[in-house]
Image (cartoon, rainbow, N blue to C red; front, top):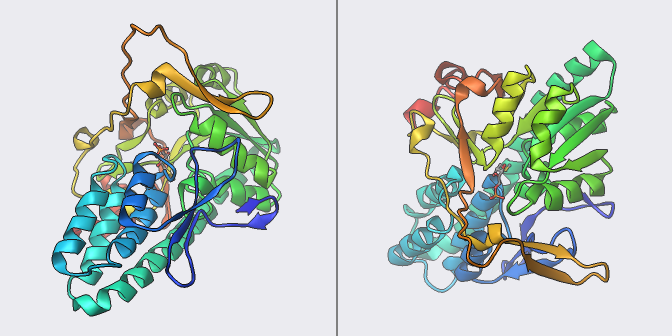
Length: 363
Ligand code: MRU
């Protein structure tokens, strides 16, 4: 996607494999800074503190993290330790486990001397595939947006939550891929961006990337979403996912469930946009999805920029008040109108997903 008019990916290896370039997302939207990951520890830290975040980008960073981790020692114990270190960074996005298992599947059978080069190649292939999967999601979601526009001949009002855009993937995004595809196709549309407390990925990241690309959008407080749906100002909701169980239950950023409830009550179609690697075929339903509990400071404090551009964190709550910070929730499949995948749109059911991914149940 575009940054100041230049097409850019969120992650790439340096041509000589001396490091991996990322955008430090903790600084957006106030500062755009690229950062180089040189070591396994750099990659693990970047995932844990959310310099990179979003399920597909977490997976791609972990794959590159394995390559970085094998630079000094590519024997079995080092490979195993690198994967264990990366797997421990964040629990909810299944793309992390998926990427690490894919790397291990390719690397374990090879002699140690061949593993470094193979790891860089496999990480690059995984990143390229992420772009292709998201473009396919974009094409399938575009058909839904186009159909809506053809029915109403009005600007299509899409609501999204958190950031499941370009910044959450290697390129294009999942929930925002259909938005970008519709924008490129000239379909008039407008995006309601919910701020996504506590970390404000909507207000900080989704708004920033939509602005960079020139897509019309409006940021709203999370609590405004139900009201806008009730007022008929939302045509469809599209969110991303960190893990979808085999029955179509969707884990995504905290607050997604509330949006799904409001959408259901107001008969607003509610879609999750999901690439194949986000489906966890080992979980029959969403009750087993691990929900990350993050630091209370993300709730008690908020980060922003002063008018002179200084980025600061300020306290919101009384010092003696405790805060809880569950980072994800699970939306039951019955509230999900459909899942927009890289292979097409399907009902959020075991049969719907299995029809698109017949190999999935055997994974
Ligand atoms: O905590 P985050 O910012 O990593 O959470 C991101 C989300 O919840 C996204 O919606 C999800 O990962 C899908 S990204 C294409």
